[in-house]
Image 1 (cartoon, rainbow, N blue to C red):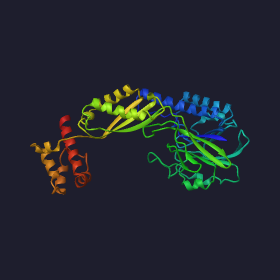
Image 2 (spheres, rainbow, N blue to C red; image 1 turned 90 degrees about the vertical axis):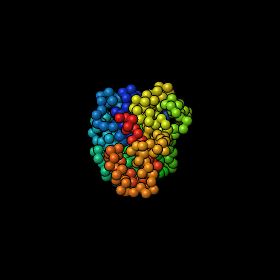
Image 3 (cartoon, one colour; image 1 turned 90 degrees about the horizontal axis):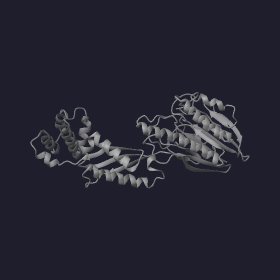
Image 4 (cartoon, rainbow, N blue to C red; image 1 turned 30 degrees about the vertical axis):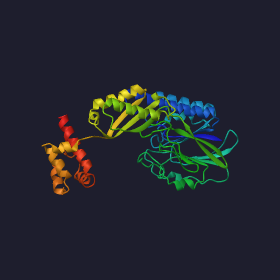
Amino acid sequence: MKLLHISDIHLNTGFSSKSEKVRATLKSALLDALEDAFTYVVENDVEGIIIAGDFFDHDQISFAMEQFVLNCFQKILDHKKHIFYVTGNHDPMKTNIFLSAFTENAYFHMFENDVVQHIKLISTEGLPYHVVACGHKSKNEKRNLIKTYPLKEGDEIWIGIGHASVPSAISISEKESYMAAPLADIERLKYNYFALGHIHIRQQLSNGIAYSGNIQGLNIKETGEKGGYLIHLSPNATEITEVNFQHVRWEQVEVNVSNDVKTLTDLQGQIVSKITERCNTIPLAAKQLIFRVHLIGKSSIAHALKQTENLSFLGQSIKEKMGLLDVEIKTQQLTNIFDVERFKSEQTLLAYILKMIDDDNFDDSLMKRLLELPVFNKKCSEIDVINHVTQKKEKLLEELIERMVNEIDEN
């Protein structure tokens, strides 16, 4: 028998940080990805679909969204495919009241509270199997409920489902722990497969234990292919295969700005070349891609990119030139090239400070005097400056010039 494991759809995510056009595309992409997942179950002889929590992002669900979900669910149930849906911390008990329309359907199984349920079914091929799961009763479920799941008995197929944090899993950030369970607690159950939700990175933690990740990236941290796992189960074996559903893909690239880049036009060409190189490895159209470009290194054009208008126009021109959905350019790791010796030779306060910093006898008393200058005005703590001086004197020189020269230019 086969099952499709997906999770963390966050179907009504708002994408508030994006423009109206990009928001609309991302919202549509989520619906399309979900519809593709359900169609996959119907067209590929799959027993049913596991939704391991956070189907919705929050409880403000529009009527149009309700109707879309009802139609999707009805389509798969009409084909006598099972839906196994556990609630998560974003869509806990009673968030999706409208799904009560399917309560009497024998193929719809919703685990919406903290009571562990154990159901036994027979597959379309006559294979008996067990499903054990529970959901989130509230948005702040911290208990290790998986520890209360029953151990597998006999030789039949057992499947567990939980929207839970496993500390050993790879995550893109420090996600808050919900229903946290050590991997050992899941392994001891000896289930044929355990479907996890909550972490958005698709990954197998152990034999037959996996996070499916989400079906569509929700932000720039969620890069690469997105989808779920097709699980092929028999009493003696479990096969796990990636299946992709995303309609929009997020990507990040680094561009090391070379010394021969003298103008923003030159930089545009270098960025386009780098993005093109990445696009050639992605099986999606340019209009389905969102790129964040990190500029790194030292360049004489860094100062020009400090101007919001230039940075915005550069991103927009690359987006239009390549037909991409969106482009964002980050310059935090790009610094100006300054002629330090020239600044030292001038009769200025900056020259005096540069010489003072470069002196091997530079000490803490001089540091305090330096910190009193308006240019530092709480922008850099004393310990930060001391660390720069003792460990990276060159970096402090650059930082001081950057601040004083740019502030003078801007004023």
